[in-house]
Length: 202
Image 1 (tube, rainbow, N blue to C red):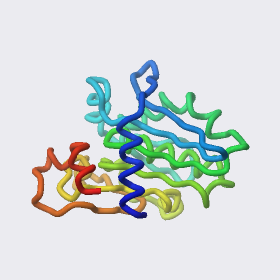
Image 2 (cartoon, rainbow, N blue to C red; image 1 turned 180 degrees about the vertical axis):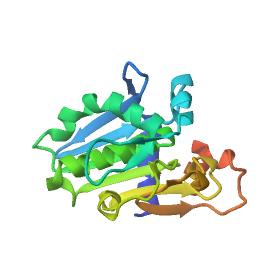
Image 3 (cartoon, one colour; image 1 turned 45 degrees about the vertical axis):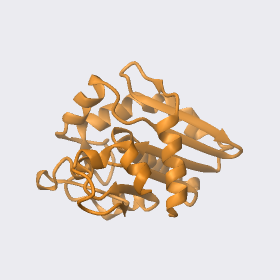
Image 4 (tube, one colour; image 1 turned 120 degrees about the horizontal axis):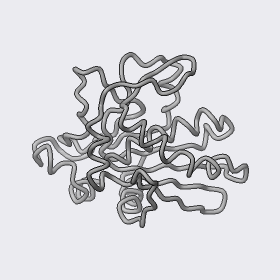
């Protein structure tokens, strides 16, 4: 994916006026003809950080093949899913783009899977992008499950600490396609995650 397109989408993501669920999960959407765009905001308050730190593994759902993911992100996704379900099920939508940053990137990843699983008619026109995305899935991911993110892109500014959490040693992993930007050593691990750093490197 071209970096100028990524930069444009990142700007869109960080400039939205987000809606909030009762659990303070921030989301927004835009409809452009037959295309639906879903956006998720980065961590924005104590509630988000508490969810970020709730990183024990939890079963996603009672489905086959089974898989597990970050419990805090899953709780946030379950909070926002009812607000999105009718939008995502709209038969007049023929293309869906999902974009998130940081905490929001993790939700974009779970939203992407939901669309892939529930709208098989859109699998060829579904795209997900997670800027500064943390690791969300846990354990050995079945191939049949990993394929659901074949059109999801994790964009990492090389030294971004968040993209290396939770640590691989705890069993967490990335799925989808990893796109790296920037040059190692340009920022410290915290500064590499800042929006201005992503804008500079995209």
